[in-house]
Image (cartoon, rainbow, N blue to C red; front, side, top):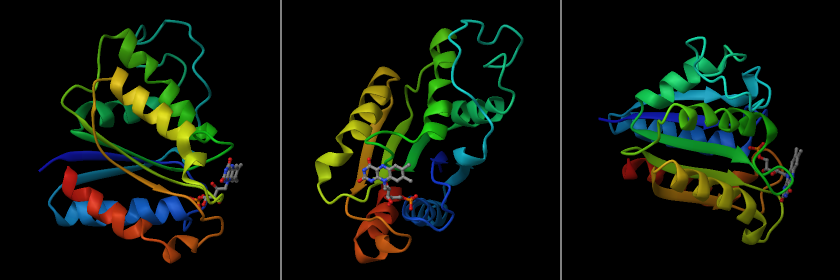
Length: 180
Ligand SMILES: Cc1cc2nc3c(=O)[nH]c(=O)nc-3n(C[C@H](O)[C@H](O)[C@H](O)COP(=O)(O)O)c2cc1C
């Protein structure tokens, strides 16, 4: 059994990326994994200030208390899944703010070695290359942090809530759970 942290990044509760995240979580729990789902759009957190004071007061970010339980969940996990919609060819701001705080892991000499990682993302435009920016950021980040990427579910062509049902996204997100 693995501990998996699923970070979601859409304010649309029933939106496309959250539906795929839910399918992943359901299947992962069925397979016996312990899943913690964290909605980054509900986390009040600003950007990294690059103050280099990480952990100086005992918490990973000296300014952002709300980041502490997220950092602890990630540290204790065996796997990390990022599930978000594409915003302006990139990772949406609230999820990016959480990721920016991973800088504190680097400052403390911590990485994701031994952890698995996967990406679930979607966008309205039809061409798969539209997702390249987010995919690149995910892959380089996980490479730098020494995580093992076990899968990516990239779904273009879904704009409205419910559009994901016209694709194989939910099935692929569910199947991703078997890779953890
Ligand atoms: C602020 C914002 C920026 C977006 N930027 C893009 C974009 O650059 N390319 C694209 O194809 N879709 C873009 N979209 C559309 C969403 O990626 C798309 O509707 C997606 O299915 C939303 O996923 P969700 O239902 O999980 O929120 C954007 C949507 C919003 C609200």
